[in-house]
Length: 593
Image (cartoon, rainbow, N blue to C red; front, side):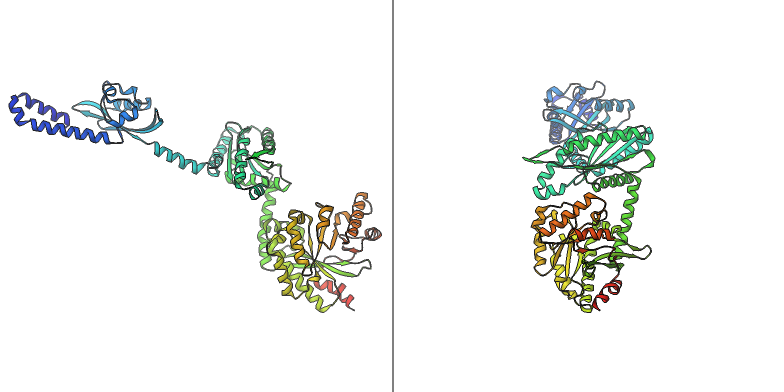
């Protein structure tokens, strides 16, 4: 029996009885009923949910609990009897009308919306029920404050899809928007563009000035890039110091798309190049930007990211602070490098590498030393020269195990020659890569190799490049002096091709300078090359350094060098790089006789 039916039954019974009988028979029941209703109302008032009873016909509030007063910020007296529409959002009223139109008993509807009060926006989840009490229609409305849940959901969404530092879309959200943009270009037959932006030398700022300045730079860069983008463009932080820009509808044909994208990239590059004030420290930086255009079904997001990355790394390879568009040739080059890296890694482990030796001679053409030069004896491709694989080894870090192998093999061979052909050679020259030299245990590893091969340190001359020397002058000098103290000597390789400077040449404890073959090649018909070579020889003599010319291939070159004071030579005129056995046969056995 419904509550209204019970009250009507009690009322009828009261009318049919006298007052005294009522008091005796029903007054206790009335008291119990009143207490029951009061307890029930107190219970409702303690609920954190809004509870409202509304007459369906005229939309007036019949009853409510205290939470309604708190949320609506109104008294019970002002609420009871008032029109519910003046208190609830219009979307809730729409749901009430829809429930009433269906006129189904116990029909229910759920809606989430916001309400404004003095504390701001409050998220409420309303549950609406259309019910009949004593054959009269009512709405029972339950409401729950879900602001905390919405805040948590928003926080989770932000953490999942946005970068916490710059508040830009992260990689996951950017991928989703890129997928959507691909569909749009396909449907509208237009072009889109993906730009990958990497800050040049960002790690140096972090390492020298601290991550707090690096973070500040990232925030300012994101603001600058955002300032030149259109409303439909998306800027994301993909990771570290790498940003990505998604541009939709940059043109209906490729030429116009290229032009629009290039103009935007130039603006971004220009803005990034402007000075920054990072918490009181002035800083400048540049960026390398890779761009790929896309056009509908011909692309997917993985391919586009890969191509934009290739273009961006191409920009870095060309000297940084550049813009590069993706070209299929770049892709082929990258794949070639990846294949070579895998094969080179295997080659080192399977000892497919071999050493050739090129003689170094004096004015009389007598051998005084050799330079160890690595070759790759590929099982299918045959003998591969170093310029085809050394750059890949440098990029991938394989130059370190390869360099260690070269050092060990060359010293072992030199020790064997000193046993078999005593005093036939004064020194063995070994090239040292930048990464190999920068290893913290480099000096110890060289000394260990000398001990293992039983070779005197005085027979070993390490050749360093100018780029290695200027990168960290203090550390370079320290390592050179440590190894010279045990007897090794040092040569500056390819002199004149890098950052040649009298200042650092004076400071470095060197023994020899090598004139790069690019200057020797046209020495007798190019006045500039001739002048450079003369200057290098004179400078080396002034610093009391040996000077050796590389790439000497004919008598005219030899005559010019001899006339201008060069006394040591290396090149095809005297001997090409050759296996150890051939060098023994052509030079060492002859000299030993």
